[in-house]
Image 1 (cartoon, rainbow, N blue to C red):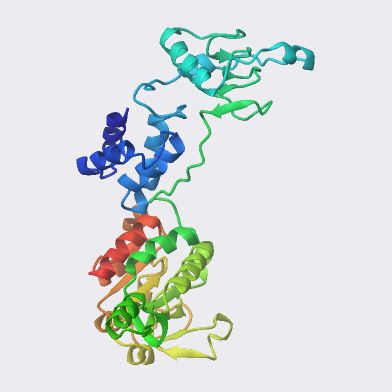
Image 2 (image 1 turned 180 degrees about the horizontal axis):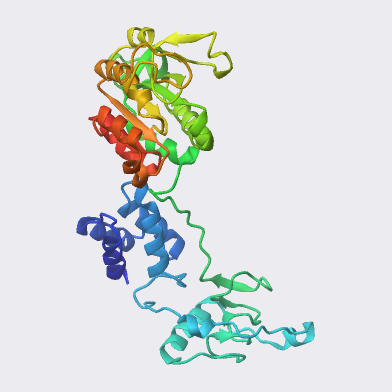
Length: 391
């Protein structure tokens, strides 16, 4: 069973190693977790999953390999065929009839009997009191009644009598191809963090305090500045027009970024960067900020993230006066290159699915200007973008 689990993970693209497998076996032998499937799930996940983007693949393989198993042991390598549990009828008994149904022993005897039934049973059963099946009084199966048993293959409880429920799972998926949620994007952005101690010394340095106290012979408390994420980020958001359908995603990105980065500045633009950006969309025509001031205010160690669909007329990128909203004396391409000349660590996140990019002239133009540092606004895309920014 465990060996099959290992190879199934590798086949699904989860990068597991033989050393991790042997470590898991040693942990089981040492009793780090019991052989209950829920505890084994968390132990094996901690052993095998090194990147959050593989959690979904791990969960799918785990659910497939250990489907219908609540207790994992060397002698319990069996699965209940789905055909045995196919519902054709449900058993309904009166209270008097229920009272006549006898219990089949304690937990140990029930599990031991279940093992024997799996060795003996060859076909589907319905309505009986012995075999694994449906609509009966057997302690094993679904849609029947027993004072104490193992519920298998039933979507929800009916009498609240089950000792164990084999099919119950509460494992959440995290797929690297899904669109963003605030939690998911926080997970992806955390890989960009670089911690440093800055500011006032207001955090206890326990190790230094112990060493200094031992050295001096009296209590000598040492304090250090709190650790903060030292990464500095400039965010530029495209707003209005074709970006309106993507408001929710950009809001989630904005929310996640503000919680992850202490040093964060943001500005808005429309379609392409030109000579001015702004902070307040309601006052954009009165309180804009010259882009040149931004380039002179924020040092080159800032990392730049541009968020937009890059969908516009190519004239807006290539020609003076190409902007749809105002007269721009210089093309958007000029301002884009000025930005990139100052900030070497810059990426573009695009909410348009990557498979459609080649069909848009403006997207391919901006992708070329960005030197192929444009990424889709998905978990997988942000993961690639963060890797680019960390280079």
